[in-house]
Amino acid sequence: MQPLRCMLPVQRALHWGPWAPVSGLLLSPCRAHSRLHSTACPGPERPEDGVRKDFSSRLATGPTFQHFLRSASAAEEKPSFPAAEDPPPYLTADELRGRQRKVYLETYGCQMNVNDTEIAWSILQKSGYLRTSNVQEADVILLVTCSIREKAEQTIWNRLRQLRALKTKRLRSRGPLRIGILGCMAERLKEEILNREKMVDLLAGPDAYRDLPRLLAVTESGQQAANVLLSLDETYADVMPVQASPGATSAFVSIMRGCDNMCSYCIVPFTRGRERSRPVASILEEVRQLSGQGLKEVTLLGQNVNSFRDNSEIQFNNAVPTNLSRGFTTNYKTKQGGLRFAHLLDQVSRIDPEMRIRFTSPHPKDFPDEVLQLIRERDNICKQIHLPAQSGSSRVLEAMRRGYSREAYVELVHHIRESIPGVSLSSDFIAGFCGETEEDHLQTVSLLREVQYNIGFLFAYSMRQKTRAYHRLKDDVPEEVKLRRLEELITVFREEATKVNKSSVGRTELVLVEGLSKRSASDLCGRNDGNLKVIFPDVDMEDVASPGLRVRAQPGDYVLVKITSASSQTLKGHGLCRTTLKDSSAQR
Image (cartoon, rainbow, N blue to C red):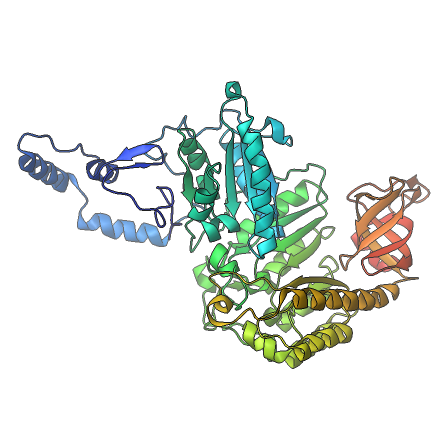
């Protein structure tokens, strides 16, 4: 099935009469018809004869029954990547070109938005746009947005007020400045953005980035344009993301999009659509290219990354059901068949033994033993797992529709730590969810103390429209109570994380160097296997590959660091030697 495309701006949300300006094209019923058929409108003289004659001639030369049989066979053997589309009839190929116009991209929110920015830029670059890091010289400003919490959206509204002044002051000689909203906020609010901020020229939802050249071409006529339709199969598998920083040591690789979990608090299924996974072959090809560019770390991305399921190859669409973590359930019918996450992780880890592999964000339900065993066995798969708990209260977890109890979650934590010795755990928590009592809150506090996470992401609950909680639950925890509980959770997390991290003092950690420390030009900064930041002096050290040679570590190098101190978020130490992933196992 081809992705749904919106050829008219916000056609699900705005209403027009018989005549309406649409994306810079004036359509009447007749002209709308002519977009679908290559015929002219009937003339004033005997229109019924012209229509009858035209219909007869088209019928005589039209497709036969055999044509439809051939088309059906071709559809079953459709290529992995969509074919290039012809320009819409109301735009020429030249109008779709960027003509060296400069684009400024700003990214807000999660890692998926970082990857979406790279995808959007790849598409625009191929259309002839240039990228600029100076907002003052931009011809187009695109904000890649987040809707997960109200604060994230408020940040965008504030930014739009700033950009309004920039757009107003724009010199006429330079041409108009176009401003667009991309991603989840465009998908959630749709026409509300266009109505509230008239200076916004275009909207593009997460599944509409291929349409950016058309949308931008439409805005050149002074019209607002939008494509906020979600797709059942868009994964951008054939689009190679273009990284903004050429000297980067790591990259994000999107392996799937959307989410089927339907947790009651979460807006993601409504802004990013249903789950669909990229073909394994396209993911492996992207990782190979990143390895060839010298990158030393990739993070496999998805809203529910470990529920990955590639159904593109028929021979793997068997009836084998999904293996869930013990004691966990789903909010949807059990899925069957396809190439699973364990297969993908295995294949990715074999591409380059010197490239670290991470993945985020998983759901605790999707950690079968084969995934845990693979993480334990492969030196280049980081021994770090993100395990979002959200709450320590079984009652609240049920209201959140998480599919597990506190007891099942704790059992999974123990099983992971037994399977992967020394594993680093991180988690997400929400303070003040609907109906959360003080006792529920204290159970979350106790879970933080019991598990002792290395890294934590903690937020106060923010109700989102369209979610199940919005329709069926009451946001009854006062804001001041939410904030007080959040502060308590943060305090407890930091106390426990400091204890856990201090156990690393005296140990040797393998660190991938990212660059100079932001706080000191005499220190280097990198991350260890557990994804903790490690700071150490930028001094000469031995090189394992060249005994007797002393070198300065560079971004992308692996360095063994002896840890001397630790806090809740950072480790500090001194570098011992530059090494490799393969050699580091024997040295530690």
